[in-house]
Amino acid sequence: MDTGWKSYPKNTDDRIVIDELIRSERKTLQLSISPEGRLIVRAPIRMPMKRIRQFVEDNREWIEKHRRRALERKKNALPEKFREGECIYFLGKPLKLQSWDGKCFCQQEDMLLFPRQLLEEPITCLEQWYRTRAREYIFERLKHYSARTGIGFSAFRITSARRRWGSCSSKDSLNFTWRLIRAAPRAIDYVVIHELCHVVHKNHSRNFWKLVESIMPDYREQRNWLKENQFLLDG
Image (cartoon, rainbow, N blue to C red; front, side, top):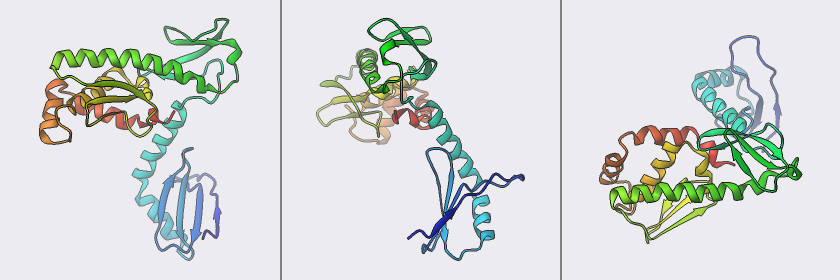
């Protein structure tokens, strides 16, 4: 049971700021970063502050890394409402939202025009635009790599998955989350190749990765990009 918490103001020295300290009957220290980038420390009731501070400093690298990621996710998350100048991601690049008198969404260079009547409305209806673009773009890339490799598939589907970019069923049906269309083109190609290779190897064996590498020699770079930009699945 939590017995209370304290919020610490910013320090004037180089010490890491503890935004919230929660003491309870627990026996160990625990660090967590909130979606807003706040550092939350959970500690035993009687543990000296000096020891808590040392634990925080010893984990400085982890804290700074995860704070950066949290702030990056917050910065690049889908806005809650349609507003002029807000940004969404499409094929790895930001598109600025701009209202217009038309009745549908329209992409123009680095802008996405949306119907003026949607101003200040929840942005949830944008999902359909994303789904349509994802279905068109990803299917074209899938056909390209299928023809290039000679690997076929039984079906193609766009899903709402939040935990994975794509999947391959036991019956060789390939599924991709519509959120993948927010990623960079080369990263999208990696996911397409990855799932296509699962038609041949239903595992992550050495032979599977050899096949992936034979098609995309720089697949590790694209895989790392997706890990660093996992926040794109949050929208």
